[in-house]
Length: 285
Image (cartoon, rainbow, N blue to C red; front, side, top):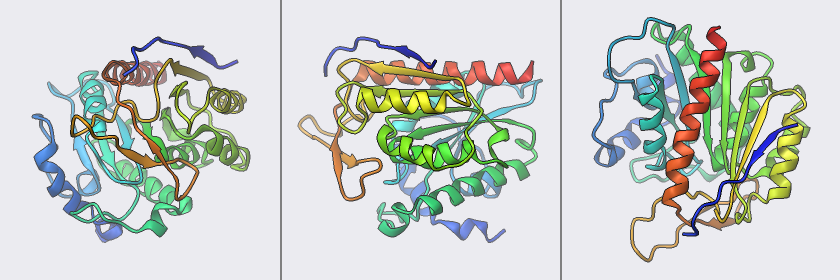
């Protein structure tokens, strides 16, 4: 049975042309926190924002988490997770799964195409495997919202799934993901951490419980339900009165309101980093 926790929160190469990531990287450079980015323009550095852990090179095989951002593109939600994960000695590659220009405009047709998103994610995994730094690295997937389906399907893929040590799903649209899992064929094997709020219309407790139960047929699953949290609690508004909305996972054309929870954001980042660290350590034994 999948485990469930209910914390209480206070309410409140040619491949490079596959997508125009360089423009997005330049636009995001002004928003990046003060930390080192990997140097270079080939391999993973060319398809995302690669953060390497500080300190000396590890004596054990390295590990890397692909932070798969919403189909709206890379945004600062990932920075807190990246800081926590790299502090655990794990590299983080921030990627997005659609064409994005410097003004963050992209193809809606591609954004709605689950097959295209999955193909891009598998391409990123291949690029990591070809990089000498990560050829034998443990691999984790951290998926935000609408990116959850591509991440889950990658973890369930008969060829790629065996390379994935852990999967973290953040408010992935549990009903739609459950339906996708039912038709995906083989189940995933890697441990799963599912995080959602009980006040999230896009991830009801019943739907997320059902998703966790389905995934638990083939993989260890831990479901964490945050009391009082809504969708994307880790999205910090840019203004005091801003009420942002994001695409509703699994419901093309619909949007869901975001309500920020600083406590939830901090807790989620710590929990995700600990989950990945434990999964990678277990694989090395």
